[in-house]
Image 1: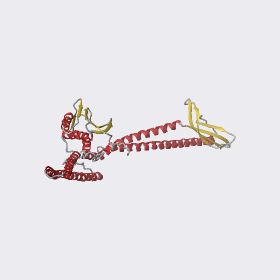
Image 2 (image 1 turned 90 degrees about the horizontal axis):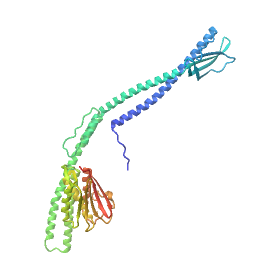
Image 3 (image 1 turned 30 degrees about the vertical axis):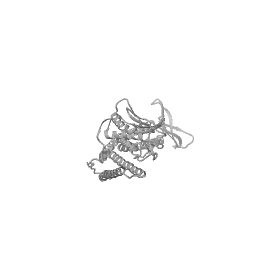
Image 4 (image 1 turned 60 degrees about the vertical axis):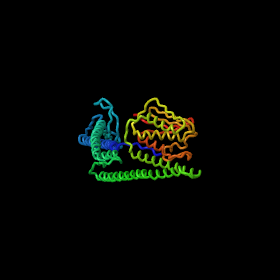
Length: 420
């Protein structure tokens, strides 16, 4: 079985995509900006150090004065020259009365035949403050731009998709039984306009096919009644006549039974078609207790054993009363046909559900197919095998849930419904 994918709204999906893309771009651009500005400030500091070094060398060369400004500048005479090196170091700064991080450039030069070690330092904290200020300012600007673009994009997208959403609502209200043409909102977007054209064409075709099929079903059902009635009458005439041997009588009786089954099949197929076509729209408060009492009273004349109705309170459902009658009659008829001989049938009606119980020798082999059309366990009982299929259609129509179980040698047919 395919797993169900969680559904989200179109605007939320596009907004979520925009949000994630913007977030990724913002993070990477901030990281890139941080390292770029850091490298830029570091080069500026190094250029400043080399500039200060050059000025000190020039001062020593011209004035022979060793310029000192600890910890920023230190000049010392040395016995030998070493390699120039550049590093970060921690030094106590008297002006700040704390240890600070400095960028340090140490170089060696020969000036006026004297070897010098020139150490020049620049405070790094200021550079970091500038770096943080630049990055924070960038983030604030980017965040404001993002918020503005997000709501602008959302508003623009909603306006752009407005015709689609309106047409979707119209399609949800579309009914095959209605004569009203579906009213779609026009759009200046080519794809939406083409979609409207296809929807209009498709709905018109579906409504036309539905009417044709509905008319065909009604015509077939109606036209079959007359020849079946004529055949039934002729068979009855022959049976009631004289000079029939036992074999002829049995054969004609079998034909008579088959005609009756065919008439019932035609009637039930027509009923199924009407339910599927939603032709039962007369929804009224229906007293299920009274419906069951009337059906049980009628069926008790045909079924020799007792049909017991157990109900403590009235159950009122909002549904077409004709379908309520069909629902109860089919459940009871099914129980009668498949019950063991001379065993009672128990009907339990309570708030929220209806249960019909009948004795049975064994459980249904394929309960998942029980409510399908023309499914039957065996050919022992001659019937149209459409009763439970009709029950299922009525349940689907009103949101009821039919179920079957087998317990203590009893078949339990239960209908769960929401009481109104």
